[in-house]
Image 1 (cartoon, rainbow, N blue to C red):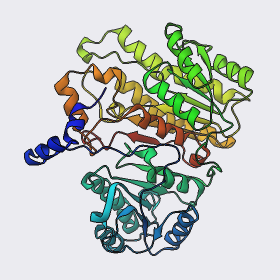
Image 2 (image 1 turned 60 degrees about the vertical axis):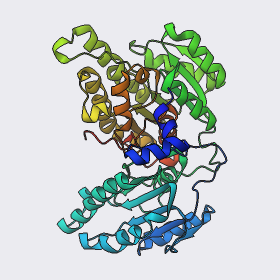
Image 3 (image 1 turned 180 degrees about the horizontal axis):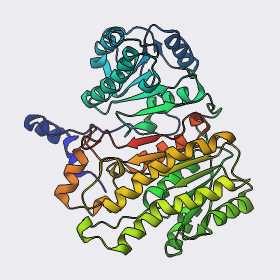
Length: 446
């Protein structure tokens, strides 16, 4: 559904009126299109560590215009702060204030990225304080940025560096227009696994991917995005959505599998279809889900159980089949769609929030089970996304929900799909058990 308000305040008369009245002015976000530059303008890499030097050299090899010190009044595409050797909160002063001096030169849709270490792995209270300080700093800065600019962070676990494959993959994702609606978030790189693709336009070439709930909405857009990135698709949805499913499958040159994912044999049928039709299975995207909203005082057994069975119990059963299969052992990827409702809660959605919180718990606990085969499991947690479902929300509630994030607008199904495509790629091979919020940095709740 079109955001009429955003269109109005980005027109000439509407823009002037919004400024006079102090109304929100959501920027038109720069979203990914094949062939576009990775970043629009020079990239400043700040920090005096070896990690900063190595990252700057790597970015130069990508053909980016890299600066180690900002030039006054030069419009910038991105600012990257490499904070990988912090030992005390006082160590934040120089790089942070250097970044502050360049913020006014950041272009519309620019990027700020930090690379730091997780506080939980620090060996001293001083180092832990400094590392946790980066979290508060980055999330606060992301709320100060304007004109569609975003701020996100990469956490480097012990044994990883600023140029580990998935650290570079995360930096590329956060720099790119693929992350347009990801703001104020951190991704942990836990291992040296992963590899940057040779063809950055088709990072999933040669992969076979299953997408559940693919007949419409976000699921259909996930299928289109994975197809664009080179994957061969198996699309799954219920028999009642067969015509729509077939249409999407034809569009992406994939195959359709009409299936109730709550069935005891759903995992086996998915594996058999993928292997028989395409010879392999590399990626499974758990997107299928339902809402059956009611206040808990009015909740009945059928409404509760349907949401739990579809949104989480089915995923658990399918994952058991995947992990037991000999056909899902070559650097497999599982990506689940969670929700910010499972993080912050939402009135009238106790069943839905429980199921989506369950998805995140499942992802974290399942991560070690995939490492022996070089696999990963992660989740994407969307916030307010412009879909047919959100279009049915009453006008006033919908307008408030759209504005309650740092980017002051709803996301698009493509924003969710871009995050999933990244987590399904080899570039994210060192990212495991993570939950990436695609919510424009929602201002309410956790």
